[in-house]
Length: 268
Image (cartoon, rainbow, N blue to C red):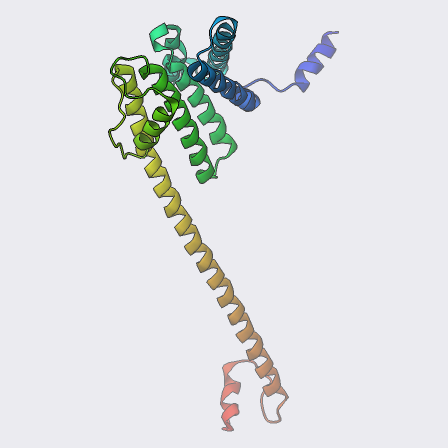
């Protein structure tokens, strides 16, 4: 019996942090999308009663999944103290939302997970990754700023349209000033969005520069291939000329340069 157990244990690969991350990529992404959808309904529709409680359960259950993921990755890490220190911001993101005033930090946990998953899934496709990140960031920021600002007496952001317009002008660093946050939390959201906008400009600039360099390299490679073909064609013509010269009477069959003067009719 023990032999069979040992045999099964040998056939199963040991669970590592890398394997856990690979196995949970898309399930966590699905939970993240579910969280954002539930949060969007909660902010835009403001349900009460049973529907409101169901949304709260969905949001808290989704956040709990991220907490479990954090704990498992900590347990599976090779050096737990070092991993813990290096991932302190992630600990704050998953721990602080327990406090009611900091519940918006749950959005950061979702964004961190989606960033990790999409980054691994579409690595190398910088443009697609940038577009997905920007769309999610604008949508989430719009929900967060609307949730924070609309009940304030002096608020200028009262509808989702206002919030969406504010997010777009902020992330693009335009900032018309017609809409602006009045609460401390709203200003923190604005700062995060501004940093995201500046990072976006850097990513887009780097993407364009990389695309230009790749196009230039492709053209250089194409020119190099054409040059090689021309050189090969010249070599073929030279070999044919030497073969023709070798068949002429009085011309040496040697392929070296001593046969060249004979082309002019002069003796070597």
